[in-house]
Image (cartoon, rainbow, N blue to C red):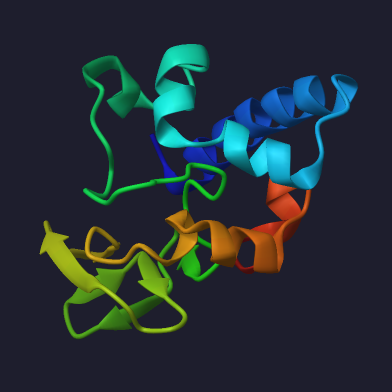
Length: 138
């Protein structure tokens, strides 16, 4: 699956859940709370492949999944730029995390960054439209 395919598929999943909560008249705070990892594993098991194994993408307490992916993560399936013989396909605009490479491809590794999974950050950039928050990815 390409980055763009994942992005579009995830945006639809996110939108479906948010629309359901808006119909139920959830407040912003309630919507953010709904996306708590423990709740999502129970009630939205198709939202993330890791949920099947009750596994978190980042081992932190109070993981929130509203911003699965991060507004600072950008990608281009055609490649962002060449770095010698390698092509960079994803990066962090605030230069957090690390990279990994294989087959002449470099990808960003966000596994050591928890910024988008904290409620304070989510509240700061909250929007009902996940794609609007993720505008740097588009």
